[in-house]
Length: 198
Image (cartoon, rainbow, N blue to C red; front, side, top):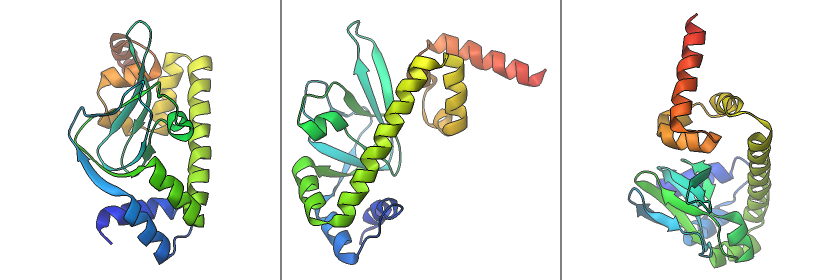
C-alpha cells in the first residue's frame, strides 16, 4: 500500500485491529487530495459531505458570529480527522467553516462511502464509534474551559496539553482560540516570562 494509506492504517490500528481485507476496503474509499493554503473546504450554510484525514498540513475550524467576528473552535494537524460532525451526521447545514492554514495533503472520504465502509467493515465501525466519542469528549472539555476558566488559565491549559500548537499557529489564532485579543495575549506572555525570570 502507498505510504499515505499506511499513515491512516497506523492511526486506526491504535484503537482496533485491521485485517488486510479491511485495509484494502479502506484504501479503495479514501482518496488522496492536495490543497493549497487558504482553501475553504466547507462553508457555513453548506452540508458537510466529506471527512478529511490530514496527512500533512493544518485545517482550521471556525464560526463567524453575528458581529462578523471569527471564532476558532478547532485546529486539526497531521494524523487527525475533521469535518463538521453534526452537519455530516445529520445531513444538516453546517454552522462552521473549514479552511486550510497551509498547503495540506489529505485522504478524503465522502459521506456515502463512509457509511458503506462502516456497514461493511466491523473494525471501521468500531473505530469511528470510538472517534466520535473522543471528539464529543474534547468538545465538552472545550466548552467547559470557555465557560469556567479565565483566558490565562486557558492559555496554561493549552501550554500543558498541546505545547506544539505554539510553533504551528500564528499568535492571532491562538488568541482567538482562548478567547482574548492578540495584544492581551502578548502582554500576558510577557508578564509570565518576566515572572519566570524573577
